[in-house]
Image (cartoon, rainbow, N blue to C red; front, side, top):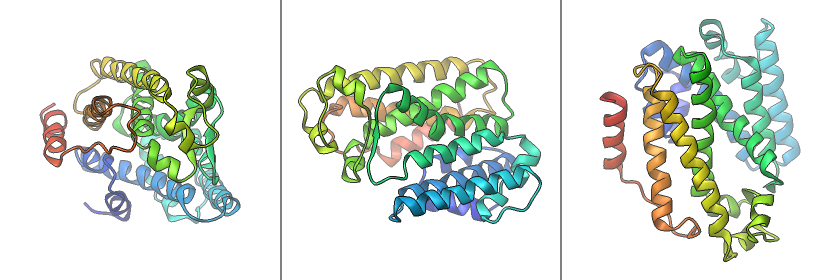
Length: 277
């Protein structure tokens, strides 16, 4: 089955697209709709409009979510498309609003994380909240499902942040916690200055170790959850943990050197952890 939601995610080039293709049709379509919503609000935050316009557009989507859960008909199509997800899988309104909260943190010309608490809040909103929405569609609940959403979201997002330091810096964004940088004497007055700081590697090592711990906690949760229901999570854990290992092999502070992940290796991991896992 194809849909506008599926086409939106496929066109984005997201790694999640092929992971979600592993799901049964009804759950797959629901997840495509969830991720299409996330993609739309993410595109708003990443767009070229002034921050004031981005905030207005995100507020439109926030109000639309409220309308959806009050039984009305929201205007943005990506929110209306969530109606069947809400009806059949009992997703939480607060998690959808948390995703918008995270995009609001991304909507400004300059983005920084003033401290570890802000960093963790940002990651919870843009990643772990999506994990909690996914749990509902996967049919998962309880402490192990909560553990999966919490740790896999953080593991994936920290890996993304470590991978995209240079790309984010080009847009005036620095997602590394300022207090962590200061503790390792790796601060700078701009993202470019931080990238050139000789102590940057020490701060990045802390985040990489943290990501590994989150992957370990993810594996622990997955060991107690139904394998068929968690195939997309298993695939994403496998692929992104390899990305982290690739970044470490390159040198975390060598942010100007891209890490290539071959299509063959991605396919092998998809087969290993998605189809046969």
